[in-house]
Length: 158
Image 1: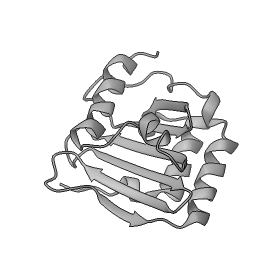
Image 2 (image 1 turned 30 degrees about the horizontal axis):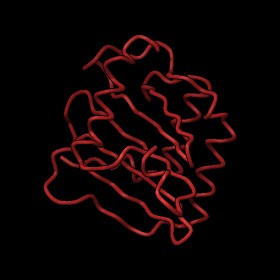
Image 3 (image 1 turned 45 degrees about the horizontal axis):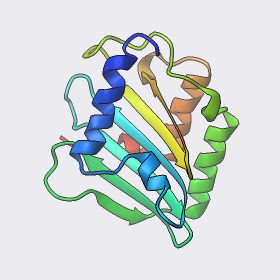
Image 4 (image 1 turned 135 degrees about the horizontal axis):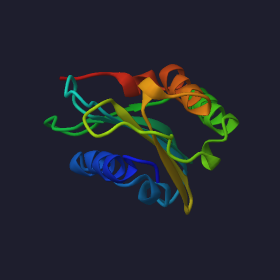
């Protein structure tokens, strides 16, 4: 784990838990589930609520779910275009997402926004941390893939 991982990982996983969302690994083991992606964004300066955006494909449907930390009510769920899901998945696979580890030199807590990007299918689950402001190489391309393929994750709510 890189510097800051021991703080950022548990704190970002806790956002999903506070929103009442199951872990991606648990969601992926749901009967009929084919794949899950989740982007959790922690805003260091509290300019917006931390956000958890999940897309999943099951044998029945493809869904988008967005939850905002501390927001009253349930997470927002909408149908999600299967082609967009496939395009997003291929973008991450093309970057070798499953082999990437946490980005190097994560900022100290409270110094910059940090993202947790996760993927799960069946019994496999993988996640990594990065800071979009300091991302370089494959991590910068990963930030770009989220910005273009899942812009809903970047929606800020106060």
